Length: 355
Image (tube, rainbow, N blue to C red; front, side, top):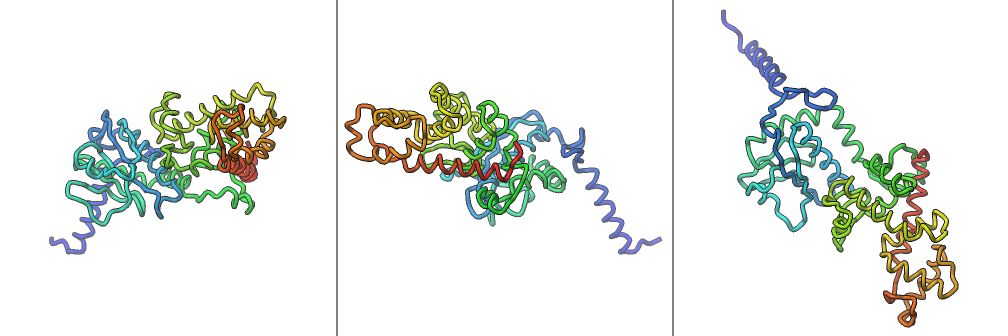
């Protein structure tokens, strides 16, 4: 009996669908089920993954890098491998490193064309694709992306990073939420060690980086809390791209600075303001301000009083003051820094009234 072409096509499609179901990994609770994927591709290996996402129109205020950092970590967990995640510098050509085998994956924006030797995965989303160095990895990456992006957990992860965070406007518009950032759990952990309301630490991080893990200042400060590499080394932190390590380093530095004022008899909020000022300007500058205030019989434990005398520290006559060790201090940035953080803190308390 002959089978019609229409039946053949239907039967063929059915076989393909069945083959796909049995050939691809299944997810249970957001993780691949045991034995459902090719564990030999990455299992037990250490891979190098580069996040090459510049701050452009697609970067969603820097949150895109944070999203892909979490996805890279999740990829490593699901595929039972270790991953070293690197933030690509603007002057570095990581696609060359990919071809040379110095990197295994480069997460980047969609490309119209690429050099030979670079393989592209399926799209992670409408803007992002993974470049792969070795075709033996490509199939496994594509399987993981296909299942991850179709799973409910991916939507939840992405939602954390898809908001445009403008705390002042959100507060003015009466927005109330139980979250402030994708990193709330980490912020709460380290704010407790510092003895601060976690929303104050969140305000510092927003002021420093707007919750962007790959922010880099012209001075070389990096990450969420804009920590200098030498400061990170002092606190034995080696990966400033990692959100938790960056917040840990920044919090350790805040804690050390806070100790400078903890025995001065200041009120707690004044102590926070001086700690913030020192985080921005350096402890030596703030020590100069306080000594100069004392020489003028001004309350050196009141930040608003310090703000009033800072204009005098911009004058040439300050160079003659024995109490001032570091010379003239403009102070505009530091005054604005403390004021901005206090405004952000008030906005965050309005948005998220529950501690």
